[in-house]
Length: 559
Image 1 (spheres, helix red, strand yellow):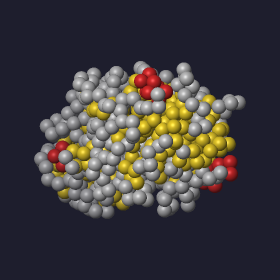
Image 2 (image 1 turned 180 degrees about the horizontal axis):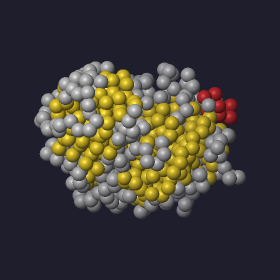
Image 3 (image 1 turned 90 degrees about the horizontal axis):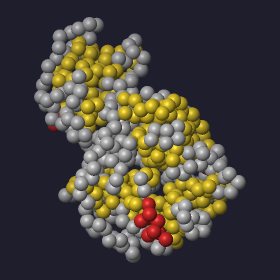
Image 4 (image 1 turned 90 degrees about the vertical axis):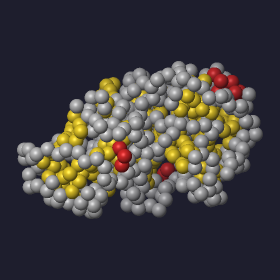
């Protein structure tokens, strides 16, 4: 089966996920929590109105350990952002089909690009690209239309790396303008079962003094809070170490895993920072400097410290890429959330004023496939910044493939922004489309017909999820839904936000639903629900706890 054409959404489209409020650009990093889905059951009953109109021990990682600083108190308060970038246009094309991608320049690049892509200017207006090719890196020279035109190396290993890592390869590259030295950020894996089926990741640095022809290991700079554990769920992935530089700091984004007294929680998006001059000075000396994870009001060590989720509600993240956008004067990030066989894959755009607090997500594209390894690249060749238009490279694999790299394509999307930041919708009339709501469970039919959202459940627990919101509970206190059902039962609203990660029974509200041939308006007061405070990132709606046909005229979040 061919990879389907990827659907694009214009600037006002915002789809499933969440956002979180965070902190001003000064110092540093992160600690976590993760949401787990709730199952609706009994809770407080609310009012309905009359009918109206029709969320082991760690092995040593480096022979030259860096002494970490003590925890740092008093990180400045977050710069909250409830607005997201407005998109003017999205253009997509396939750069390489499977056969060409897997054998660039006649070489073995079957696993390329297995992570984020980094690049530096080369000769004749071309660029040198660095990306993982399975457990090693590949170095190619080409253009943005043909990045793999010439393969200089398909098997580039980082010299002096620890043998404890079965996988160690990189892409993101920083060139020091003073010395010309290149610093590669790499993704490393300990294969706990010996074959890579269960891995525990880390992030490290390597340096090159010959324009990327070879790299020498500097050491590991980030480790998860939870220690490697063969019996833990797979996998403790940290991503490909995309970074941006702002106010003299590296902002490095990753995923973390937190050990809360034996309970493992994944932080889907976290950040660590380090002064650029300290990182460069240490690299010149063949070592690493101190990195700090952002953990809300404080920071913690990059090696094993705790971190805090950056997006409101800690929504699911696969891989991501980041840049500083001069048109918006904000950080921008693309985030992939692949579901492979289970759910469609989505690619989102978010923005931040300070690198800590991120906007609600806006959907760029969705496909019935695995979509992963996004990389933001500026068309003007600036490796550190983007403008109103930028490229996003990513790979897709169709769902009928047993594993990635078979029938895998490399795509390039060009995103053009209007330069405006806009707020999310909070009223959905379902006149022509689903408004960004997503069917999550027990729904055989979920489509808009004649001005109403028709839902035909397959079981007794149907539920759907709103687009990203970012609504202030100081302003919005009520949810109003107008619908028809063909059986009596109970509906329920869950929510995720700054006070609640994931959907939880304790933070929800049930209400009786009446069988009716005409639409009934249900008005649910959320102001007294536990956790309805701060910002609400997303809403889950369970229209009924029966296998009953539902027609939803509208849903409105109101003052």
